[in-house]
Length: 170
Length: 462
Image (cartoon, rainbow over all chains, first blue to last red; front, side, top):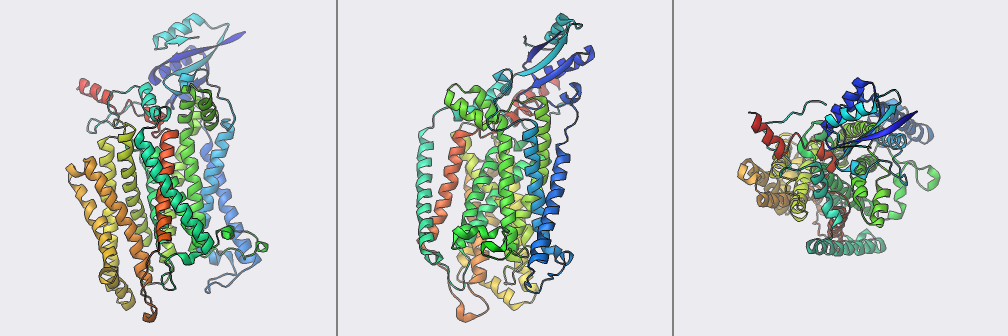
């Protein structure tokens, strides 16, 4: 059997020190809630680097492709018009005039695609009830959730946390 | 944790020995408390202006564009002037939130939220003008690439006016998302502090169930950084494309290759002036002097000197090139601008945009709240005249002297402009009551590096 305990800190530096101690003791931190990002805690609690920027690149590339396809279909293939003698028989010849909208389409798809992916992956959506364990984690409290196995020495963990600045363990 | 670097040569950005909790308290106070009489007075004034604007717009829809002062020679005037002016104002918000994020400027923290809000409201005001200038706004969906069966041909992707449709709509939607994403954690703070069930429900819905786990934050930070990365070229592209509406024509006075950088600098210039106008009032009314400090004001004033000087050089370069090109039409347009019947508009522009911002070289002036407020108003007016000068003076005396004429705005046009100012302030005042005007959780990340407390410790170690 294992049980979950919540360790409450009131400073971002203290929680980082606490997380490092737990890592040395071989105890698993299962979650951390904080009012703002704690820089440097991700590797300590074993979080891999996020791939959001990779998503943005892929969505952006999709946007570029879609825009070029749209120009080719509308301006070259379906209904090409002679506008002021500008080249209208091949996409690559008319491309300079299409660059602004290609760029806008790239940005539009990259930005919205990435944000929608983020909201879905993190389950931040209208109608979702927040699951932070204490309302103060959006103000000035930093909470770490630790899974204590039977083999772990719970009182040693608690005293180590208290010594690194924890104000409450529950 | 990466070491906190405290700069000994810079003054702290957060005054008054704040704790994390005090930041929350100070920023949430205007949202949770009751509005004072100043808020109500300004809100009612702005709301009346907005209603007047709506009635003028309704009159325009009913009677057509003939109700404006436009004529055969001057086909673009107040409407496009206002459009470019509002879009330009919007640019400061994205500059503060995106470009200064990439440059790691900490002073952006206290002002980015309201500057971004200003961007969105300014773009809303800007968008109204081209929408109604089409004359038949109910057919505006023709601007989107819809199949030919909808009544028109495919849109023309060679036209800068269509580029504008894409640029403005992308800019608006990306800015809106960027702004709202930043708001989510702060709305969650208000949700978790709310006592009344109604506000708990409203802020609970608005905050999308934000919980703030380490996973969320690491994604959030990366998303913000990438959004800043894509918004930076986006904001430059938007005003570049707006300038191309003019620069790609063959009209003397518009057909100028320096328009893109000149317009972008002018946009940032006017935007910072509007941010200052709003912030100097907001910091006082909302009691946020310890967060929006004189140092913030001074930094913004430095941006105004830089962009104001770029704009000044652009004016002089245009004049020089008009002479140097040897093109008689180009030369006449510029002589007519400065000494023709619209000389007053040209010299108002020169005074407000070139001379007044240079006063900020004096430290006493750029650190004075009252002087900054007055100069910011001057810049707002000057930048409106810049667009008016570019548009109307280039059009009113064209190639055919028999069609030379003057342009006189009607009350309807003026009413619509005043209406957009009313709309802008109505939206901003509602924003200041409903949402946290400072990115409070983001601000907490720099508290240890740049506050009164951190600087006190710094002195202690020496």
